[in-house]
Length: 254
Image (cartoon, rainbow, N blue to C red; front, side, top):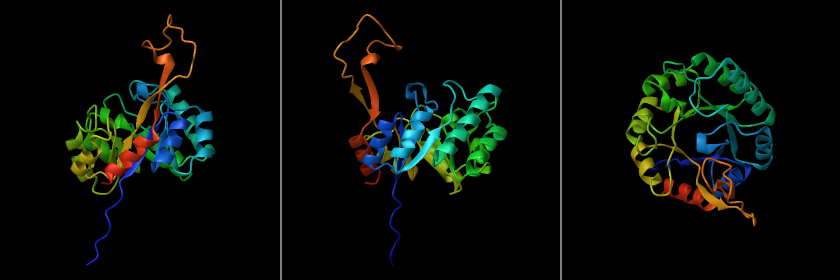
């Protein structure tokens, strides 16, 4: 009897720039989540980044809708910004958006999440619920709420800092989902743990930034000033790496 071929594990790359998005595509990623400020958990990228990425990419382009770093409890003003950003993603021809809003008690804000999701799906865009999920008071109830709202996937580290730490919870969430939604592990996934994580959890999609540090080509260096939070950040930056993406795809499917 012929058995169906194992389903290929798909990699979504969390890209902090168009250059990172292109590296993800070249390396064999299935989808890009475009964002900015990864060092602060990610925020919405500029409209210029979104438009340029859409023009350059053949693979799926999802965009993070998050107006600021910090918690996932947003003011009315911030919510208006999020709605405007969703409309921008629709106009730009993106494949999907990545959102997440919580209530003060740690439950999913079903009203606002539902409104944003409906805006996107009405125009044919997919919707992912991001790691606000990991900050929920009860991830099992949060999962049911997100499924009810019609999301296609949840990005999660299992309520822990890294997906490896939360692997047991991720496996249970996949069992709970029973095929109703995709559970996509993310946070701290690299070449050294991706195969074990996939094997243990049964995940079919994984999420990683696959970054490396790039040194600045500046010849002049002003060492009397700190522009960021630590010395030296002015002369290096992180970018997704083609070879790391290739390795992750290969190892996840090994």
